[in-house]
Image (cartoon, rainbow, N blue to C red):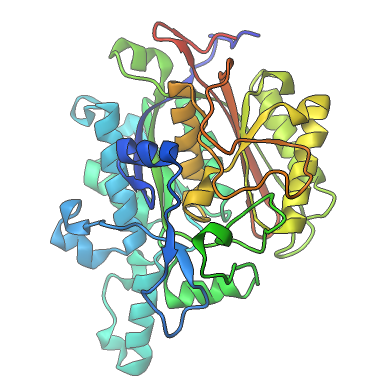
Length: 422
């Protein structure tokens, strides 16, 4: 099947990662292929924390990426986003100084905003006086803070925004980036990061009852496993540079992958439980593939949402079987997020990074700590890095609390001089 050249095509030319797996795309990819689980003991708030483990970004010195002025104005979540955006732009080798600022936009996803900053200032309000609250409280906690700060820092004036749909929003913004390119934009800085490992944020998450309580990192986050008993939260995420294909080729940019299609649905079922029939999830997967101009037979690997809840895992596995039919047991399924935990809006962004790198390098990273034979889901899980004979497309799945479903299809280069020809 051939992808039409009649429309403007959106490709990923730069990846910036700030995650438990590393800072920068090189360190992240090396850690991923080594299968290093970066879930570790959580000690930041030992007296109040409802968790024992977390995926934490170690050795991140915000002062290396931000000025002191920005440090006091922003939350850790925005620090990650600003650093990741810088890394993505450097990776893309995109010279913004030569571009019309109105042709470059910024799109981010957020699930919870600037938790630590907000909590600190609310404490100051109630324990001291309104005058003790920082003047930056009104902007630092807000969901759009990362988009705004990236835009200001780089002088980007194109159509920009933020999308809040729990984890699913991180794929929805990738779709919006593609639409911006199709409508004439030159480039988009897009992605999601989170810093939800703070007391207030953890209390909000804990109320869902889905945290894994173990102290053993190898047992803490095991989706699609008989030992699945909840997830481990984490922090960090990824940001990308998305450009129009011909322009990227004209400047001899390295291209990781093309954004081929997207679909989003909502269960309309319950305020935090997924619909047990999975019909809306099935529709999201099917539509994303259809809108890519592909069929399920064209998909080579699935990056799963991987809730690590037996009921939710069964819904996702059922959806894959419904969409892929007899081929469901053959298509590769992976969840490398088991190395870092669930990063909320940062998680699917990191999945996009993993998928784009997999397509560019021809190797699929693994799901760690999974015993695929322990539970019968009928899927072909990747438990060690694999180089399949065919690796041209990836389907990325994300589900958010409250019934959000989102899926994105990426296509990869077959040869250095011929991009995405099926």
